[in-house]
Amino acid sequence: MSNNTQSKKESALIAENGPWAAVGEHPNAITNRFYTYERVQEIVAFIQNIVPAKPEVAIICGSGLGGLAELVVDKVVIPYADIPNFPRSTVAGHRSNLVFGILNGISVVCMQGRFHPYEGYTTAACAFPVRVMQMLGAHTLIVTCAAGGVNKSYRVGDIMLIKDHINFPSMAGNNPLIGHNDERFGKKIRPRFPPVGHAYDRQYASQMKQVAAKHNIELREGVYCALGGPCYETIAEINLLRVLGIDAVGMSIVHEVTLGAHCGLRMLGLALITNKCLFEYDSTIEAVHEDVIRISELKANELQQLILDFVGGIKTNKT
Ligand SMILES: O=P(O)(O)O[C@@H]1C[C@H](O)[C@@H](CO)O1
Ligand SMILES: Nc1nc2[nH]cnc2c(=O)[nH]1
Image: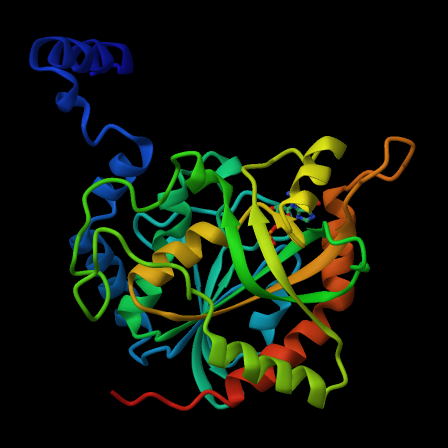
């Protein structure tokens, strides 16, 4: 059936039966109807056939930060393209691999490449791999990303521990949990209205601060906000974000953390400040993705050191 015929049929259905016939037609609801619990189970079974060992920690690598996965030993690499119904990353600085193995003594799975809404994926599609990784056995999710520094005191190359986030897409009605709430995702019953006020684990945050202090790495702590992208921000937008108390701005993480909270993961977030945001109209510097990747790769070692040490300190969960 052509798209046109399909939408004519849907319109006729709504005209005949009222607006409730459209329930479930939000793009995220459609995605969630596709990535059902059973489909996630199928993907998990496919992966377990290749890698029987359970990962404990899931790591999502941000722009230019995929090198972390190279530190994994006893590695098994599964290209996204080989996994049934798995999306592919289309952005420079993001490879498209799931990397399994051991990182500083703990079993991990790394997403070497993430999905962003500006690539054309719904936020539900961008985030659904979090459910896959949780179902594979992960109890912890570490999200990393490149971000622009909104806080005027931040410098290029700073690493920010994410204390909290502002999910602008969700505030505008684009939350990855829109649609049917399948209570089976996660170990407990997952609620229709999950709390996210403590999505970033406070104990993990203080452990990360200790790791940074040990390595003499200055760690900022602040609020990350996600916008839809792919444009970088206007000067007026940056000034607005600053008034709102936002420290760093990016185009990812928040939908992943939302699903992570829904399925009960303990989470830690790190943003690498790859560029200073524009505040002044007479400034001539503009953000460019090539610079974002260059700075990420330049500072990757520090970020990797932090994560390596941090995961080494996570108590193995044998339950
Ligand atoms: O995947 P992350 O959030 O690290 O990537 C950021 C946001 C855009 O994808 C890109 C812009 O340069 O970097
Ligand atoms: N939205 C946004 N994302 C980024 N990712 C890296 N730098 C930036 C930035 O300045 N703005």
